Length: 461
Image (tube, rainbow, N blue to C red; front, side, top):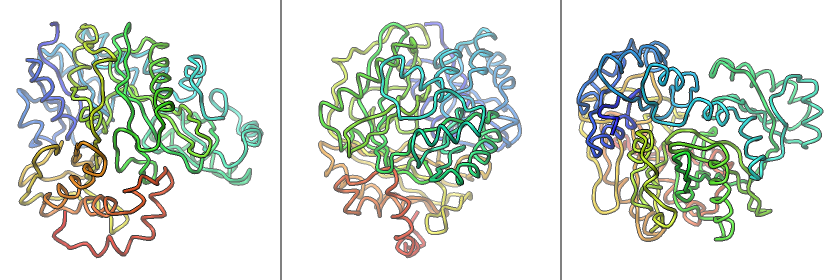
């Protein structure tokens, strides 16, 4: 074992999650933090903590040099980037290695290739994985791009080649809309990711978002089955579950095999996720992107398989061969995860930073709550509003839904408005309960249920 101490270059619930995984491996955890997070739960739980800068992310969690220096000074041998911030920054991964440290994730070249959506599409095509009809490579001439859009067929999605989280995306239904929206998408992408590159994809109006978790050690590759993440608001996932509710066994096998083929084609090392759109009308699925990191929704996969994905990616980074075979990964039951954000769903999801009062965390068989909270914690206004994830697991989907409702009823976070009332309303919705949803289902539902959400009791979280 080369890694004895890990520096965590992230914050919030994922930092807590990594600390716990490191401890199961007998490793010490060093928490890098901004001054705003000096009293965070991750700092309290870590073996050591080091401040890397002031509250703005650009001066702390996005300051790669400060993070590397903190790792070196602490005596850490490795850096875990979590998700967000620098997790998919190829230059940072290269700089970590150049400093003599281990980057817990794939190498910079893999991140670079798969993080750029245009080159990732080409890699998928080369591996025989079907892709959504779209442009080849980065668009360099917006005039020519209109012709390509006509060839694909409107409506089209204008997408940033870099980044994620729904930014740098526009939908154009006509050539006139395209001419207006493409420059906006490029500007937003440049501001968010430092790269204004764009490409086009055919819009599949009633698609399901299916993703496959993979693990690889550079030589051997396995899939950890699929998750469904079709409930989305502004292309941000709200609710995730495993397994997917809409796939035949044949399509499920084809999806998972395609994900493994792509991972093998790039010699992937670590944990990653291959994302697809599934068109129920045609039964076809299409590759859309690969995330070269652990994802927010990884706990539903852990729940149905009984594996620790974070620990596994640390072992791989430490040079160990993949400890799992495909035969080891047999799903059991059904799992659902809801994201709990410090936002007011009755007020257009306005962020709601503030101080947490009393809290009651649900417990019992099949209930897990990954979070960053303690009574008196002051939620800072500088970062993503994710507070935690409530995960339930049961023998089947109907029992998982019942367990989710019970856990939400038990959850109490005084002093904060959160998205828990939204999750409770979704858990009661007939379409959600029957699985009759798609990626464009939630936003119209929110418009029609705004009054219902506004009537939630003030003491609900």
